[in-house]
Image 1 (cartoon, rainbow, N blue to C red):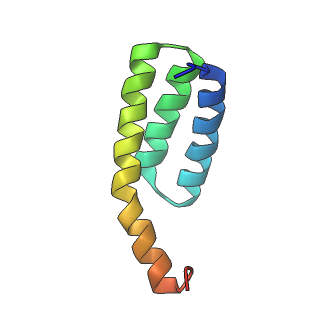
Image 2 (tube, rainbow, N blue to C red):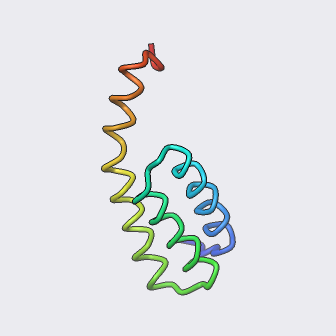
Length: 75
């Protein structure tokens, strides 16, 4: 809402790295796209990239939950 593009770019960069470590390629690519558009402060493209990242994270969530449950990480 505040359109702090520098902060969005920094957070997207962190997410990109974390998602890359998890081998979550499509989500990492979406984070990279958001990082780039936020750094350029291109509002329309950043909003589109944000929506894409949200979709990728939603599709990744069940995989992470199953993995955590199978390893007993949340026990």
